[in-house]
Length: 179
Ligand code: HEM
Image 1 (cartoon, rainbow, N blue to C red):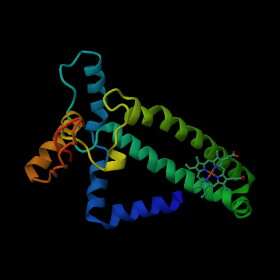
Image 2: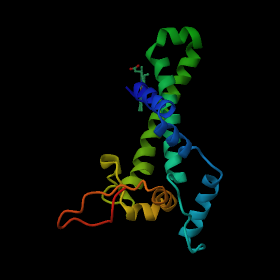
Image 3: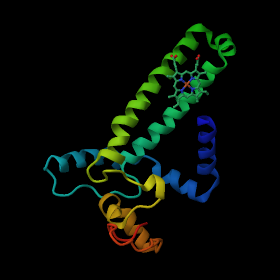
Image 4: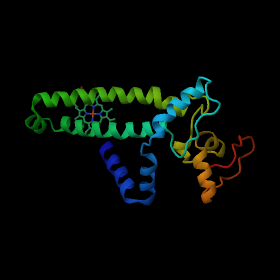
């Protein structure tokens, strides 16, 4: 299922205009190397403002490419483990054992990355606690956009691609229009 989902995603990236745009927006740029230092400097109180991000910050790009890399690694080593007789014939017992070791440690690394890193950004970070619901709703409030992706918000306003959400129900927090 993981391999099927990966292939589906690759098809989406390559074959649809939205997917191609997503891929281009996720490509690492030079500012993804400099931004972490600027954020560190801001967090330590040396800079008055944090850098303004576009659609994806270096954090989201790093998480995305870690997922892609992890999926490819688990897919390839998983197939080696799956067809053990064929792969031992092709790669020798040593090659098979290396694949198993890589598969095992990547499983631990990926699990820890999700629990420590990913859960921090989408659950335990005080800015989003108890949870960033974008993964369920597909939407982000204007306030969140202003805070985390101001350049993308600016671009959407210019292009007129903002979509308004239904007004909040009584008692519900109003975070401004969602996007
Ligand atoms: C996130 C995805 C995955 C995780 C976390 C994961 C985790 C694991 C772990 C921890 C093991 C035990 C390793 C050991 O005994 O040293 C294992 C074994 C195995 N995995 Fe995966 N795996 C994943 C994806 C896949 C995929 C995509 C495939 C197939 C293409 C696959 C095929 C296998 C096979 C065949 C075994 C050996 C089972 C056995 O001999 O009992 N895995 N996996």
